[in-house]
Length: 159
Image 1 (tube, rainbow, N blue to C red):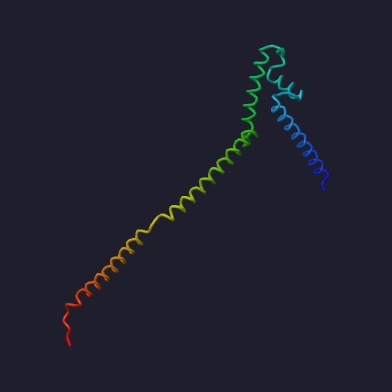
Image 2 (tube, helix red, strand yellow):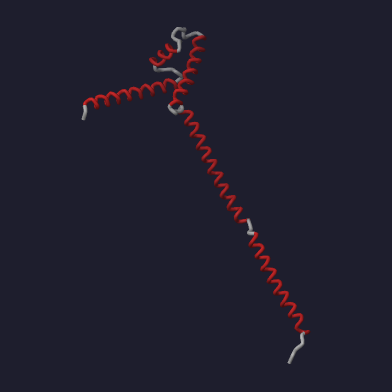
């Protein structure tokens, strides 16, 4: 195997590991309210101009809060460039999805139940008409028999 490739690949993986560690540290730092990880805090203060203010003044507190808010907005915008979302937004969306999934399942069950009930109670109009026609035919035949039986005594008998 090519030694240059191995050297390149080894250094690349080391840099990826360092980058991963830095991203994990920054995520922890943000989640802890920009506390801990003093090297990140010092760099943040420097680039946001907070290192020139005294830490025990109200101006420093206001400037820190404004800087943290601006940083979080910019970081969110940066992540959106890579089609990434903050974890809390992702988890909120997952929770909403699961809630809607349960609601949909319940509604589907209700719809199926209502369809079943509707299927049991609905009558076929064609079947009703056919049944009525058969009833009329049967009554007509019975009436014909009745008339024949009434008319038998009055019939002439031919011998």
